[in-house]
Image 1 (spheres, rainbow, N blue to C red):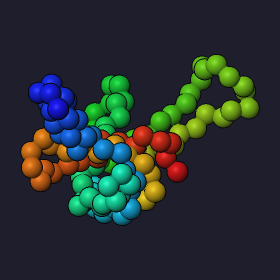
Image 2 (tube, rainbow, N blue to C red):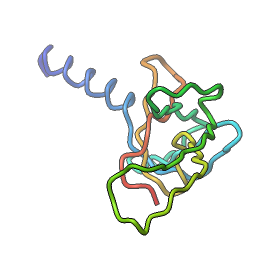
Image 3 (cartoon, rainbow, N blue to C red):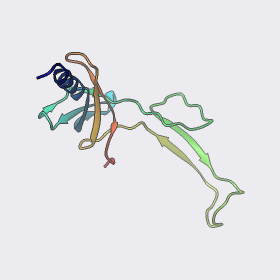
Image 4 (cartoon, rainbow, N blue to C red):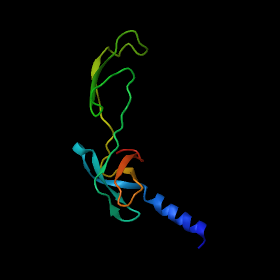
Length: 126
């Protein structure tokens, strides 16, 4: 094996363990952590934190990015059918948290026995 082939193999081995696709097998909502099963090597992860995703609502300040409630209100004039009455309702926004069975993308730090984290789902949520 040439020096270049050895470098390629080492590079592939290192990168292969950094970014992984797996299936959520368990979750702890209050800690925002999940366990992930990696089919390619038949192993389960430890408890991995899930990256906090934060939706953006223009011109709206909120105290807690983890749980936000605010009211919306429709008033005249607006486009649409007359049958739609003016109304007001609360909107509850929560960050993404994968469910058991969801396929996710996990990333590990590039050191031996490194911690990892889930950066999001890669298939439509159930």
